[in-house]
Image (cartoon, rainbow, N blue to C red; front, side, top):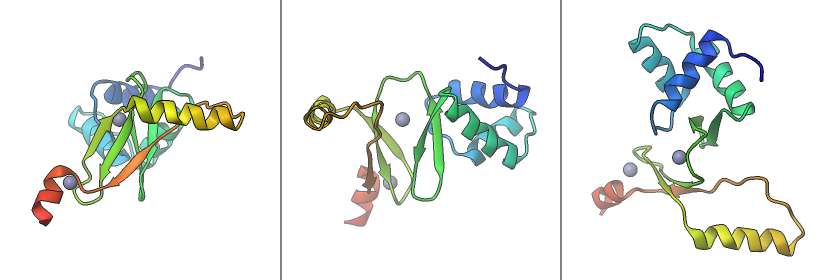
Length: 128
Ligand SMILES: [Zn+2]
Ligand SMILES: [Zn+2]
């Protein structure tokens, strides 16, 4: 594999260090806290390149992408449209239904993402 630039390596290390779902601003801020200053455009490009190489996972939200470690077990996401919280889940029944749908259509699944948008428990409680 191609050697990563020092900047991309720093971005990758930051993401691998936690379970968070990072956007580019989060990454730039956290790096800055550690005394590593990388321009936001470089962070954006770095994140996209790392995701292309499969070194991190990306999830596409309505307004932006977020990124997380690639070595977590497969999971899907519940995304709160009010506070932005992201909860992970894995439901075996949904997973196997997807396999069934694909098998019936002769389709070979190479990956999937399931994003459920709505209100998290806290925001839902505040609303009622
Ligand atoms: Zn919420
Ligand atoms: Zn996740």
